[in-house]
Length: 463
Ligand code: GLU
Image 1 (tube, helix red, strand yellow):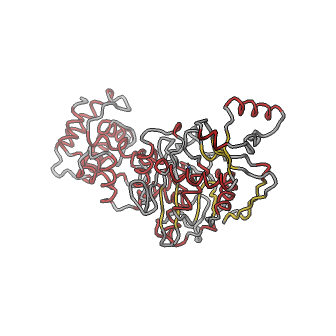
Image 2: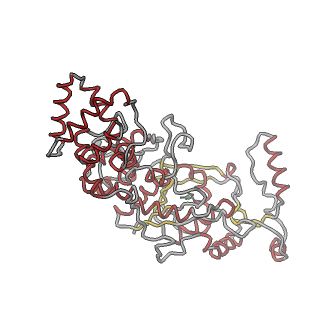
Image 3: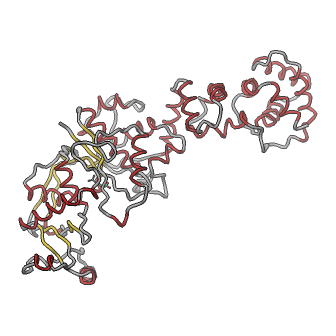
């Protein structure tokens, strides 16, 4: 049984778009194999917790449709799924490691560690713990006496640790380059490294699929699995997303929180489709496909390791494609929901055919269509010099009996001929008079939707 997981830390505003990518891969791989996808909340770093973060992460995952089989609010037989609720388990396995001499108590003060670090830096060495507490006499007694301690992993200097990454091949680390990692902190909480191994083991995770930034921690995990005598999962370290200039995806250059995209009018299915293409390409080079198709053609081993470019401009294009391909009823509902039902459904429904080809995001709708719901407050051109022609337009339009785009268009066309006006000028003034803007959905159709009374009212208010 394939079991995958994501293990977000609730230390950010929401789920990072890069982690959404990892979630998508984990979810897809589980679905493809009739397996299970788990969400585990890694909240062991109590200092960095952000209030509400966990709720937002879980909510965003659901909004994207990446439904998990097990998780803090979904239950499951391997729970609890929040590390802060599993502290006793980590204590037990921390002790086991000490008994096996794979880990040891360390009583070094902050000051000692600090001065050690400075000294090593001065000597041009990479700061590492110097195993000062490795062979203390009777450390248990000091623990019993209530002295503050941490538990450290004892990595032999001469050990060579290798593991096979499914997409990167064999990766090797040397003991002399690895620090004696703290496994249990002074507050009794485990660090990520102990907790991740214990949890992945007891949650029966078969494939650890996570970002490449976790590669450097993996040899410590391998060492722990081997020390416990547990079977190791299969590792896949996915490439990190990059800005178009190839730098690491960062707040300054791109919105990084997954919910930002939903709030700004991107469709979850378009964002996920775009993420499918990060480090992977469709065997038929297709760009637009749904998740069912992704599940059927996706292979973990085909993930490319070179950092994929996350380009919001491309994503916006793809989002526009999704909008264009949607049936108009569905688009109406999406817009209704996006604007929290502030505008009547019937009105949105009528306007959709006019704008479906023109918008790339749901949020493009209102700037283009607000004039359907209220009088313009500003006008993008000075209409004062054109009052007399607007008056003529008003009076001619007032005579129309069948208020349809075609008859409106014909009437206005006749007027421009009669008045010897340049079409472009006249329709621009009229467009601004009705919509407030120089660019709008097709004018005749818009006027039909607005209705005769409202159009005449807008014209006469300018006279
Ligand atoms: N807690 C880690 C994170 O925030 C999880 C890393 C892993 O998947 O092992 O992404």
